[in-house]
Every structure is written in structure tokens, then in C-alpha cells.
Image (tube, rainbow, N blue to C red; front, side, top):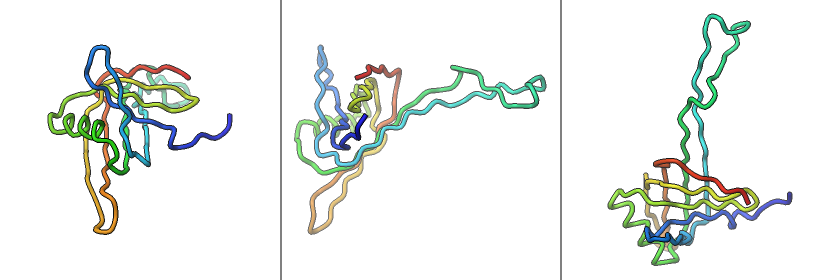
Length: 138
């Protein structure tokens, strides 16, 4: 597999419709998708040679997503702002080329705005998973 362009990693927000349409969150230059699965230690006095034993499937799974960039698209900006101020859970799609698409409910945990006097207005967004995610391989 050859290397992938970072710009091809996409964060999309759902419009809440039926069927739901997803809009790419425009202007995001840097993106990070973190998948986590906490472990549950099942070690006891009977563990072989005192090696740690983990209980498979017992931990909590979560995903966090962060992105930063510049404003470019009024539609996706409005969906992000509405979801943040209402603190409503929205469906997102996270597209990673040659890997797949993660989809599910997220809550906007942080929304930051910044700008230099001689530069563009910028924003950063952090998402926290709020339920089960589905994965479809590419």
C-alpha cells in the first residue's frame, strides 16, 4: 500500500434527515482520529507465573476526533455551531482512505475559534463518541 494524502481523511457531519445526508466539515487541515479500548485487569493469585491477565471484551471502547482549519463552508459551519450550542448528539462519518469509514453518534466536546490580525479566522473542534460506532472497510 502506498502512502495516503492527509487531505483525503474526511470528517463529515450528518444533517439529521431521513435518509441522513453527510456534509464534509470544510476547511479542516489537520485531523486526528483516536480509537480507544480500555483494558480490564483480571489478574489473580492463580495467574500463571504472576503474569497479568486481561479480560477480553470487558473494557469500555471510545473514539475521539479532533480537527483544525479555516472557515470555508457556511453549511458545515452552521451544523457544527448548532450541534455545539444545543449540545446535541449528531451522527458523523470519519473517512480514512484505504482503511474504511467509521460512523456513529458524537458530541462536540470543544469548539475553539482563533485568528491573527493579519491572517485568516480559524477553528478547532473536538468530538467524543456518544454511542456505538459502525465500521465499513474500504
